[in-house]
Length: 184
Image 1 (spheres, rainbow, N blue to C red):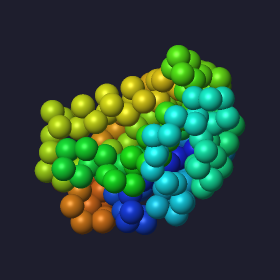
Image 2: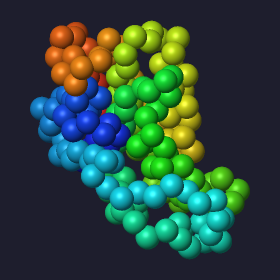
Image 3: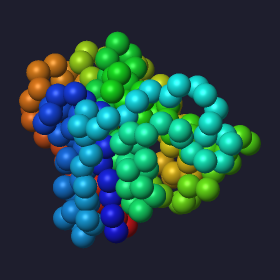
Image 4: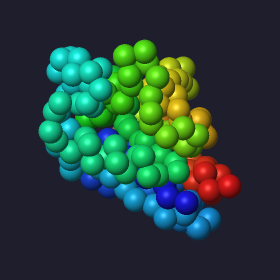
C-alpha cells in the first residue's frame, strides 16, 4: 500500500506538517510505503479559469501539478494537511485545490481512479470544532468529486508556535492510529 501525505504549510516541519507526518508514521508501522509532499516546495500555479481542461486535454498550465497528480493516481490513500488561517485553508493549499477542477470532465465525472482513501489533518490557533468542521467538510467535498472515500479527520487547536503540536500527545496518538487505519 502506498500513502501520499500532502502538507500545505509554508513552515517546514511545523504543526500541520508534523501532524501529517504522524499519520504517515502510523501507516508505515502498519506496513505502508509513504511519501510526504510539501506544496511550498512545488511550483503550482493558480487556476486561470481558461476552461482548457474541459476540452479533454487536462490543464494547460505547465508546472508541478501534473507530477503531483501522478503521485495521487498511484497512491492508495492521501493525507492532506493544512493550517487554518482566518477560518480557512492557508493560501498555499488553494492553487492545488482549485487545480483539482482540471481532473473533472465538463459533466463533473472523472476518470481519476476511484476508491482511494482520504484523511485530513488540520491545525489551528484558538478556534474550536465549530470553526474547523466546515473546513473539513469543504476539503472532503473536493476530494469526493475525485472519488476519494473519507477515511478520517484529526485536528488540533492551540497551535501557535511551530512546535506546539508536541504538547498534545493524545492528538499525536490519534494521528498515528488514523494512519494505521488507512492500511486496513
